[in-house]
Amino acid sequence: MRPPPPEGDIRFIKRRYSMFTNPDFPAFLRMNRSETLVVTAVDTPVCVESTVQDASIADFEVMVPRDCVATYSREMHQSSLRIMARNFALVVDSAKIIHAWQWRSLHPARES
Image: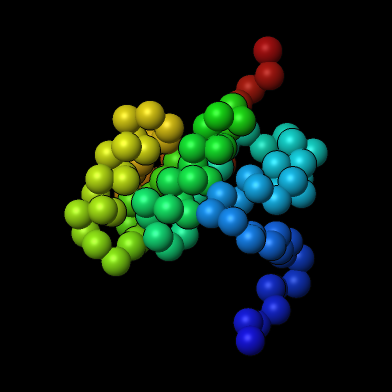
């Protein structure tokens, strides 16, 4: 039994490898004008890569924090990260993503 999500969190059911097979997920992203996804999960070459590919094809900017994804084989994990970095996503350490968010919160875009 899973614990309930924290109050205010939204939960989407994933029945296939990619989150994008649940039509509520991309609809929610579009409704909220999301442009960028940071994908974290387990099983890098299957669930993570499937979601990243679908997100990229759906025209989202995609980031994968390499230290927040994993699989049972180091070789498969590294290969999947290379494929995603070459074709679908920015693959970096989570610290770089956090730093970029912090910088952006301190330096909001100015409207012209």
